[in-house]
Image (cartoon, rainbow, N blue to C red; front, side):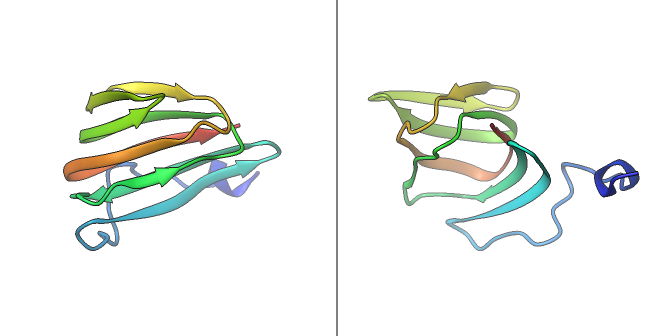
Length: 106
């Protein structure tokens, strides 16, 4: 049995809250060409720019966020999700309080 099948955890638990205006990335599963990460954003006010060489499917599980992708502003709330194609520059403009994300890279 693989490690990820034996451990039950809660996606909403935050062991170490990052400092204000910072993020924390935790890999939950990495297997072959897929990686699943939990991301904690703590009251981001400084824009964060990202560009991955992999496709990304991201779900905002908790909180509110504002992103800029393809020159469009997207306002996200808990439960919203989006697909970001590989090599697409996107900017996380800000989050309100603590935001919890689930990101799947493939």
